Length: 145
Image (tube, rainbow, N blue to C red; front, side, top):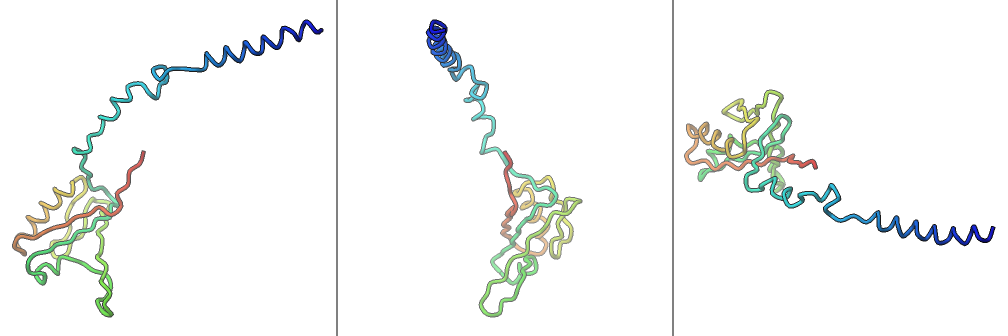
């Protein structure tokens, strides 16, 4: 029986050493690292432009040199009393891809980028305002990985 144990210790040691060398793999053999340099250039940050979609919250602020002229195009919630600033109302893109903008009415913005919406609003507001400045922000922008 002693001779049996004499062979087991070296066999177990040889097994562990063999598993150690077999389990080591280079980066080229691991699937996650294949062509890792190519993945960095798949998305060019300079070319990505978000597009509005249904259920987006959009903040639009219109301003001109004459603030009284642009006031009807900006909706605010709350009172100005007590020195508190009123909160600007956000627009929700409805199921048909439209927002209800003051004075102008329904505007379809789904599928458009913020710059395209800015140009569209500038065209629509040009009959009411001279050189309007339009700031558009997407309030619920999220990224899923």
